[in-house]
Length: 286
Ligand code: ARG
Image (cartoon, rainbow, N blue to C red; front, side):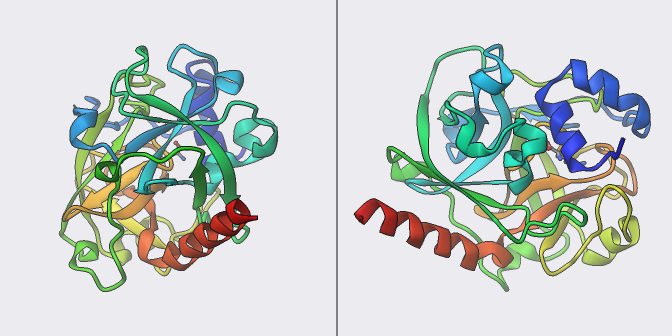
């Protein structure tokens, strides 16, 4: 089986069953396994209100509120996530056939009913998403109800210092904390660094996992490994200097030295996001 992001995402979804089936094919578990996100720590959702869970109990069961990916609130009615999260390989059906696709805001512990569940009114998946390289891994969800302004994280524009290699960043999610299918029930964050494109170009020249393309992707992690996003974190935010710079997209294994995390580069998808927002507004006005 191809061990690309689909399989990774699937293991995030059907865990622990699928994870058990997939991981023997995968690289060995990371050396440091403590927690998103590997090497992370629990965080309060109130302090990071722009982190949301993308969920469907219908597709993924209710134990963890139906969570299967992460997302970032970029305006009161708009959430960004990864395109691959909404693929048929992950959902089993097209997104239009998921009856209860929801964004869950303000719920750190997925076993509770705290915070709110907001219905997704519209799903826009980047038509340019390339499942072979993983380029263009972004989707825009339009919410049926607005979230508070305080939940919005600004997106870093091209040229922002937040993208500079060496910048400290944090990645957030409810994903696998060990690389072995241990899905977090409460929100976690891991501190990573923006790495130079050359690090990921060397790590990912092109394989079944994907190919690092500096134009549309962002490389982040720790040179010695240990801290990283993992399965189930996809679509979730990577934030530096108070701005959204990336969405969890892919990687080989989790937290392994020499295999950093690869993120969708936000500056690159800004025009697509505006376009999706514009068309959602037009639809709403009709
Ligand atoms: N594709 C994974 C998902 O669907 C995310 C993998 C991120 N991996 C990493 N090593 N940073 O949840």
